[in-house]
Image 1: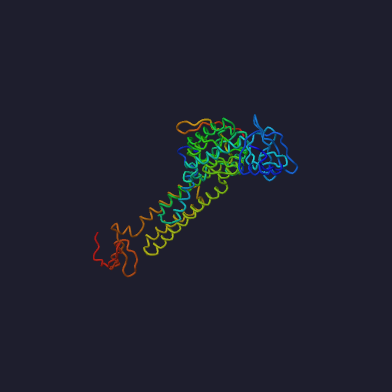
Image 2: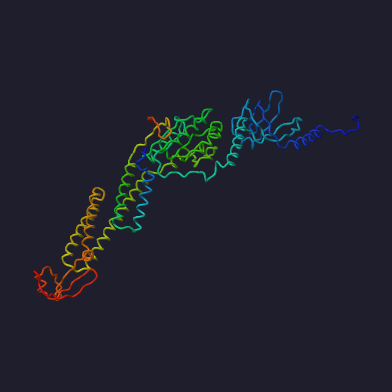
Length: 77
Length: 402
C-alpha cells in the first residue's frame, strides 16, 4: 500500500503524461526542460518500481481506525 | 314462485350459461394456496388442486403457460396462480385456468423488490450524476464477498493475471441469509473510511431470488450510495439485476468481469510508462541539439578569434554533455545535468555581446583586421578599428604611454 508521502501510481502516471505533452509543446528554455525531464525520469522510475511487483498481495481487512488507517492480516491463498 | 312457468334448460344449456357468467366475472384473478393432487400430463398440461384449510379449487395450467413455471412445482408447494375462472362443461365443474404460477414467497419478494426499486429510483439513488468514476490504476482493490465462494477465486485469479502490482483488501462477509445485509453494510462502511482503497468490488455468484436477497435490502443500497470509493457490483448471473447493481457506480455481469473492469492490464500500463519515458528522452536530446545549433550560429556571426576558440571549447563540452546524455541517460542524470548547466553558464559569460556590454572593447588593425593584443602592436598599426557592443569606430594611435 502507498504511504502518505509517496505519490500514488494514478497521480504519478498522470503527472508523467502531463510533463511529456508539456515538453513536447517546446515552449520552455533548456533549463526548464531539463528540470521537467529530470522529474519525468524520476516519475517513470517510480511507476516502474510500483508496476514491477509481480505477486498480487491479499490481505484481510480487520478494522479501520478513525484516521482511515487499516488493520489487516495476511491471507494464505 | 311456481317452477312450472319457467323455461326448461338442458344440462348443456345450463352449464354453458353458468360458464358464460363465470368467465365474464372472473377473467383475471390471483389465487394463493397449496398444491395437491399434482399431475403433469404427457401433453405438457398441469392439473392440480389448490387448497387451503377449508376449501379446494380445481386448477389447470396448459402447456404454453406451464413452460413459464420457473420452479419445481409439486404437491405441497405454496403458490400464487394468476389466471381466469371457467367451467368445465362436461363435468359441470368450475376451475381456475392458471396462466402464470409462482412460488408464494417469491411473489412477495418480487413485490417488495419492485416497490423498493421504485422508491429508491424516485429518491435518486440510481442517478448517473451521483456515480463515481473508476480510477485508472487502482493499487488497493477492496473485495467484499464470501471468502469461500467461487466469486472470490475468480476475482483474485483475474487480478493476479491482469494487475499483479495491486493489493486485494478482502472483507469476508456472508452473502446470503439474515446476517448477510448487516455484514455487507459494515464492510462497505469500512472500505469507505479506509484511506487507501481505490475501488471496491461487491460480488457473489448466482442463486435464487432468496439467495440474492441481501443485495436487494435497502440498508445495502444506502451503504453503496454513501460509499466514498467507487463500487463495482457483480451479483448473481447476468439476468439477475439486484438493487445493489442499480445503485453501484458500475455493474458487471460476473465476478471476473468486475475484476476486469476494476483493473487495467499491467503490460499495457508498463508500455505506456515506457513510451512516456522515451518521449521525454527524445525531446530533451532534440532540445540540446537545437541549443548546440544556435551556438554554432552565434560563432558564425562573430569573427572574433580568441573568443571563438573558447566558444568552441564550450561547444565541445556541450557535445560531451550530449553524448553522456545519450549513453547514460538514466544513470548519470544529475552529474550530466550539472555539467550542462555549467556549460550553459560559462557560455553566457563568453557571449561576446555580454563582454562588450560590460565595458570592454576589441581593437583590431584597420588594414589587416588582426586583433591588437598589446601597446607595441597598436603603435605599429597606427589606424585601429575598435568594436563596442553596439558598433565600431576607427581610431588613430597617437602616442605610447608608459
